[in-house]
Image (cartoon, rainbow over all chains, first blue to last red):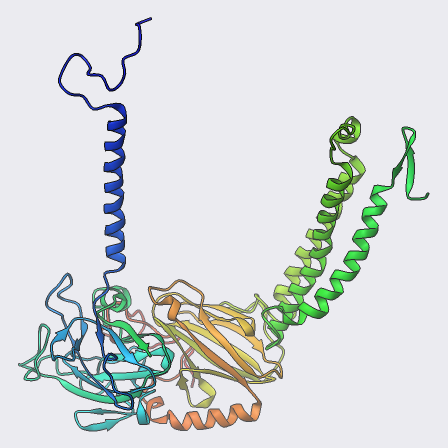
Length: 243
Length: 311
């Protein structure tokens, strides 16, 4: 036998201060806890990394319409994916925000103005060239009322604003991709080549309604449906209809 | 008593006959209750003969399975009540009886095997023959209906929505699936991009939607009108969960009225669609083309879309 066991809190080898076994365990557990917290924080931050929500509901007066202006651009020009196509939203204070999430009041008319700055092409399915779900079943494109956009003519269709659950589909007529003043990064300015599309729709009851572009415009991705087509803040978002 | 036998100087109840009697009585009660109360509400319903066939199959399976479940439960409960050990009482049964009972084992294995094999034959027959439940899909359908009056409806899937083309109504393409009652429908299911799956579960119809493939599924609507749900049943991307919509079965007169009005309403867009084809060639490289002839497209192997172009 080696005699009485040395208490773990006693100095070993006659050297300097030593950490007890329980102390070492506490340090290890603490470090493991910090690491776990960092992992959880990172995962949660990634999962919750949604763009901001533009609030059109607060301060809204009953009976009054909501006026919303958004724009589509061929390449956002900044952030982690500067080459991706995207939507942007004009905040009530006039600033452009890179988001596709909107708080809207329920059962309210929404007047939408879309400044469309991207070039177009023939649609994979011309069926989505038809306007549905808007007031009057039509949109106004550069002052002309349209219920169908022929994607095989002119500049084709660049994107759509579609809310499947509400039956809303608005094809957005494209601009000439070789225009000298073609906008290359967001936010685009109305001095650059663009089309102005206006329409109105009425929000339903409270709920979250997914909207998206149905033109497979994620160039470089399989069938054009990856990247911006699958990312909130670019080519899809939510109408958060609130009381 | 006839319910008892003398074993080791004491009267032992005839356990088997007791359990059999309880099982027979309970089965005779539970099976009709299930069939008449729950059976008519079993999914997928009776909106088509295919769905009704699937409902019938579920009911048959339940009616056979319920007595089996009851047999297991009754034996379990009876055994726990009758042969459990009690404080101060004799030890549980030991000796030869605890090592098994060959006749019972043979009977159990034989009976359950016969049930399983019987259901296998029944299920296989039902899958293919009566109304094509499960056998009527694929480019070459295993089962075809006998009706000569078939309404063709093309189901076009794309990320992330379904649209429907009616070649017999000018080739119009709609967002909603509307069908007439008492009519045989031929669903021609295809995709413009990735693999989807057309699942109209109340109709008993489910078919893969593959690009470049014309998967055919038949169903004959009954006289039951109403709404049904269409869902994508193949994980097809981040908004797969949002890929659903609703369809309606209408009376024949209501359907033809709807179809004529819709054909007229969609005429301005229908004329911009390509001629009806059973398949379309999607473009793997972006937003344009594919759906239309594009000989310059390196991803299109054919210059026209569809192998069975209508005249």
